[in-house]
Image (cartoon, rainbow over all chains, first blue to last red; front, side, top):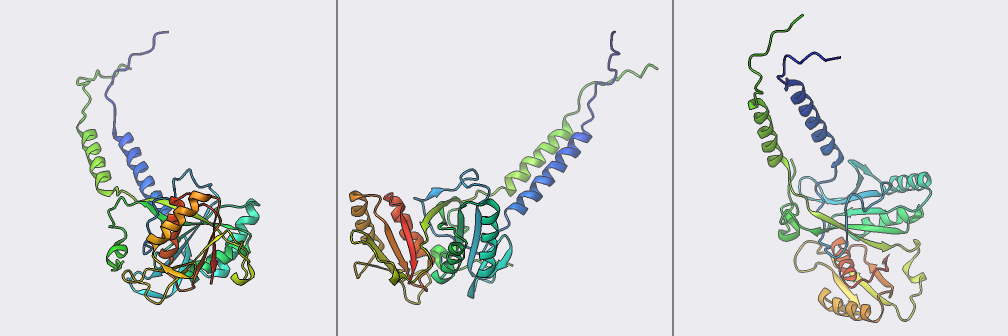
Length: 165
Length: 140
């Protein structure tokens, strides 16, 4: 019953390194994919709000972005409403919210990530689209704790917008 | 069938250490600390003109209005409380008193169309500071 003794005890690391690299590339790619968002938006401070964690919001929640400046740092004539990286009109926002409401058949949180300079009329458009789709509770996103020391939000302090290439 | 006995059974750690260092440097360089975000909830009443909704007497009603200057600087938002123009600091005092009476007091915020979103978020943050959570937002 004695098993044959392993004659070559040297471990070949090559496949392990291959796998590890594969995993790293996978996570880097998926992480950047998941964080796709409108980077021109600068949020106002709101340190007394409910701190957002991935577990805090139910998975069916919806995030709507409203930008007031373009990538060139200049003010937009009409604020840009978007979800993910798709620009939407207020009618499209209504349709999406309604579709999700019909899918889950209950209220879900709608999180509005609006730039601090967005005129209220754009925020109102999005809120009206939500109420039309029977969502009465709206959340506004703010910054609870500034970990980047204002680096991610220069306009909030200096009034000068970051320009994206 | 006998395989040749391995003469040097010692594991060579050098490539693994190389790779691990590479990974450490990669992550140290790429990982950026993100801001921590919060959310401020509001109730949105049915889309009807604000004049149609009668506010009960013991409610406090706070109107945010602003002129054209949306940029950071002299006019971040003009708060009007009790038909008087007030600063956010003054408003904070009123809200503190309101919260001392009852934290269930409904807060009604009426925003002018061209007021910056910042003014609303600032006000909501103060409401949350004093645990005034029933905030409704109207548009003027």
